[in-house]
Length: 166
Image (cartoon, rainbow, N blue to C red):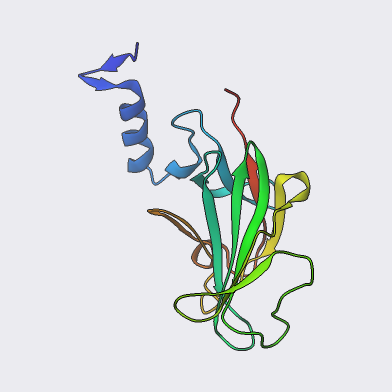
């Protein structure tokens, strides 16, 4: 049973109060679900996306030399953060396929996907130096979007899968 205050649930009242004071709502767990949490090297959460088992979240950015789009897509595989596939706009400036690491296929809109990489991320945490706004490091999944370059350009962060107990 959710307690109410003047016709509002306690959760709604708390969220309303926090938003009035400009406190970050994204750090409040509203329900027990897995999340991809973005943390500073000091452990401060600066954002998160819901990340249910079987779901995919992609990190996209513009390549530092060519400016073309690049993506790494991760899956939550039963509480393990896994690099599932990557997108490359071309094979310029260090981009390309590594023999035995996934299967290369042409993307419908140009560029290439490397599918089936299937590499677990050690410790469920990926370190990332967030690029400037023109680099555009962004996490997306369905309708969820978290612009890392807008929040933490130049910072070292960790993308950390936080499985919630069932």
